[in-house]
Image (tube, rainbow, N blue to C red):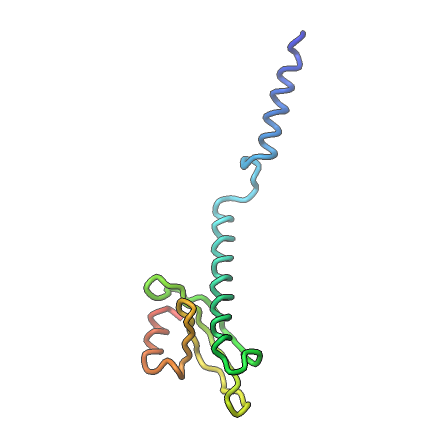
Length: 125
């Protein structure tokens, strides 16, 4: 009877490992991967909008809509797409125009020239 407590100690140790190890993790690998991807897209959006805002005449007046990370991207680079409205030199708003941010380099439809439409399509915007 001296060793009757031994199985109880073993069960307690196993229970401790289950509670405090990865075996007790309630999140599947798919859920963690999904959360990682969501964080990555949020980071791309935040950095892209920061780059776009830095190029505006009046950053506080900038308005955006339809902002999303492009489905395909360009040559492996993530592309942020959407529409932007900003203030012009006369104080009026320019009207919404398409924009893309590729590797932290913003490009608007008006300033992008004739290649803009092709890049927009190629990126999957």
